[in-house]
Length: 185
Figure (cartoon, rainbow, N blue to C red):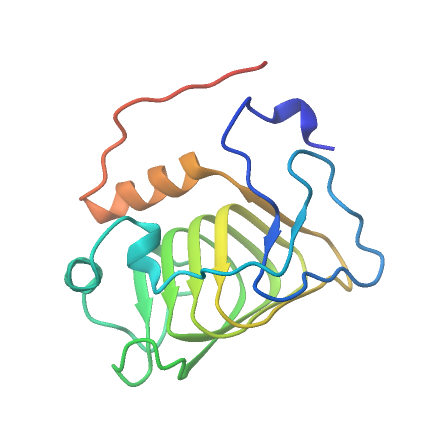
């Protein structure tokens, strides 16, 4: 139960989809406001540049050339694409544990296995699957199908605009934190 840690405004649902958000197995519904589930929506992002309030050309100039792989502990700003053609959903990235922070933009699918911790934003053009223990502070945006299977361990995805801004600005150079508010109310 995280209700004691919620601020007065800026709340988002845990799951937002143009289709139906489904919970399977022993997963429990998170408490809080708004409800954890926001299904059957319209208006998905044209790309990660909209999330960061940039133009498309500005975003690709800022993020730099793509890489086909990631280090074991991705820390910084990463654009993963195996063929250099933006938004064609061609790459497949497998993360087998580790820690990281910043921005992961994956032009394809991402599969996380094992113990993985990340602070910042993960944006996936394809499908996204988690199998294992995962802790993410910031956000995940997935254009394809998202599947979270917890066989052993747990999966915690905690939305935090501040974590996204701080961890991208730490490595992106363009974003600067102008103010900060912490509250126990």
